[in-house]
Image 1: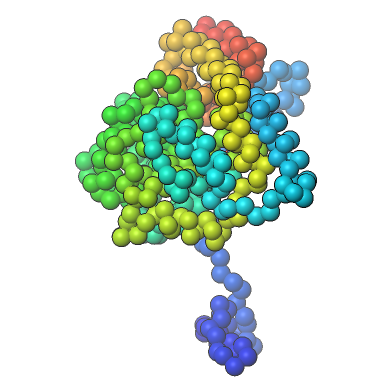
Image 2: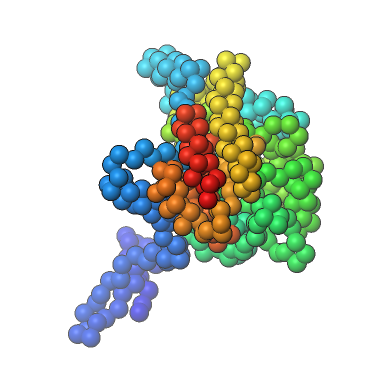
Length: 425
Ligand code: PLP
């Protein structure tokens, strides 16, 4: 096979095509090559398999009243303050004197300033240059990998939010797993001999609902600073945290030299369909003598053209007095759902993590059932849909995720059925 040499005008360029001669001597041009790392991705069949099983059951039992407590989407609509902000910003966009075109790639200052003030409530001081507005945490969790070398070893927990794994498989990085289990309350800690360059921590955690306390996060921060690792801290569920538990990794001394934080308006304010989040890359975060903040700014200004003005106005309204009050009501609504679930599990003496500081409840399947067997039992006997833990990794094989994002009525009804059926076995 030969590398093609291409004549363009007066210059000679090496082009990306390859050619070879077939047995008859004809020249054959080879097609563009693809990223073969994609072949290493496991088929993401979790939610497809769930809907297949639910559909089959519904077809056989059309009368069944199925309660869905599986997917992590919210049910409360956007708060009125957010809707008002969207309407007002739309009006502005329709008026020549207030119309806005391309905005700053990093986000409008009014929103970054609001986020900066929010951080101050937890005693965290960040500069505006360190805050980047995005169309959600998922995009940035994937995109951030652009600024890291392919030779980095990546540590994720097992079970894990699958985005961390798949984005690194796509890039061909080596992934290692920290086992989360009942023994460590699903909160793995640095262990002797651990070597990892990029460390994903998600707290409050999806799927397990487990939450790191200050001392545990300090251990991770110390580990990262000692080893030159970078912590990718996903705080998408920080809004559920109360009391002494940290909302942000930057509440931990030393984090600014080893961590990047990803956050989202999705669960905080019902933005799962509206799309907005933010990423914080401290100026003090430097590797190989290069500022990661500068790399990320370069990456964003090259590949991203910003979040819509109207969406950023909507996100900023989340931090107004009115917005905060309405959001608190929604979060309290989900918290109460979580309490209904955990009260039921407490009464039934079923082991679980989560439910406080988190909308996820991660329970141990009763009677040693594996998670797909329990899924079928829940579906067929209680008509409740949850998420089998195995979908998040081997470590979830005997666990099951319920979410507090349903309606109050559905949550109550589901727990009544759950108690009646599994409490009597
Ligand atoms: N991180 C975690 C742990 C999540 O569970 C989710 C969404 O479910 C996200 C990030 C994605 O958030 P966003 O909607 O902002 O993309």
